Length: 88
Length: 388
Image 1 (cartoon, chains in turn blue, brown):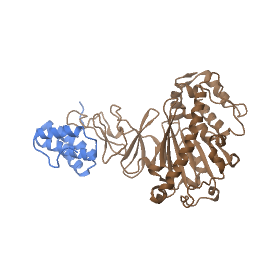
Image 2 (cartoon, helix red, strand yellow; image 1 turned 45 degrees about the horizontal axis):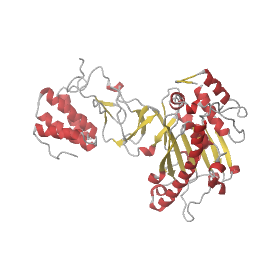
Image 3 (cartoon, chains in turn purple, cyan; image 1 turned 180 degrees about the horizontal axis):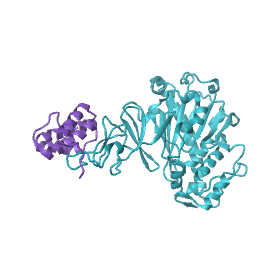
Image 4 (cartoon, helix red, strand yellow; image 1 turned 90 degrees about the vertical axis):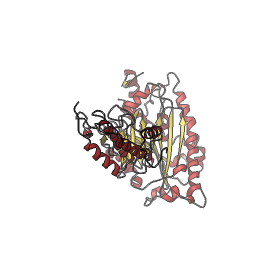
């Protein structure tokens, strides 16, 4: 599994690790790491960009089967307006 | 003679001859074996219209295990949910029809579609629809998650064999399996333990799958094709099994092979005396060939590959975990698997030979021996009835 247990605050480093993981086998560990990286990316942004990364972090946390991170990210996403039904 | 999924007048006439009493009947016409168009008929009338075995419980032993299955072109997903129950769904995302799972694996969390990442719980519910309302907006009123889960497929389990039907007109599974469950009630609820690596092998044949069924369900060929059986199992020691519309096969009253002079597999508990030297071999239409013995059962799952190709997936189960996995029985399992492998390989020549024979212009399906070919005619009549 590429990547390190810590999460960089450098956008370029985050992007590089996400790209590397994109090609890795779809394991639960990969999903959990992608959730961490996207959540870290969300911290570096605000507004729609942050919500975009929170969405990815939430999806990958669901994929990893980690209930606590998934629930936490779902609350954050809901608070950010990412889970209300839209009409357009 | 064949016209996609409908039955032409010429085929209907041939099928009427199949349904005649065995003394006057003819076998299925050449086209149902040798014409590539027979695949569409088989799919529509035989494989997608009734109950068919697609795999085994042992294929997905742990919660979260999932195995994709190509069921004659229909992509299915066999999985074991968090509570340990077997489920079968269509292996297709409800969004754009993308295949969800490409290879056997375990899901610790949701099943995420690789296309737009719609996510499904193991109970089939649509759990997440990322960006469905626009970037970062993960819900849309036009997409009702409660009504957009994975499409469940009707499924049932008997002797660890997982059966499905794609037809809303098929009977309830318990009703469909009832005749075999009743016949093999002695085995029906026994725990089965798969033999692992020494309990599975696959054979590939150049033949239409129906010929493997026909060969399996009759004992007429045994003394000629399997001369090794003559030492302990004479032709007159066998009897026919015929359940019209469901299965046919044969049984023996002298099953008693000695695989090892000093070691034997344990028997299934509580079997009646008749199984001490009895064994039965049944073709459950369309695609499952089963063998039941006091100490092991096996299944041969037929997977057609076009009209002239066939994979036979053979799996063997034993009566205890030690018999199936223990080191003490390892050599015996290997010997048992070799015994069956050798017998099934002996069948390949005649199954492939019958397939080649279906290229003979004007072959009329052949005649049946009323004394010896009842189980084969039973299968032919089932095919004829299903084709209409």
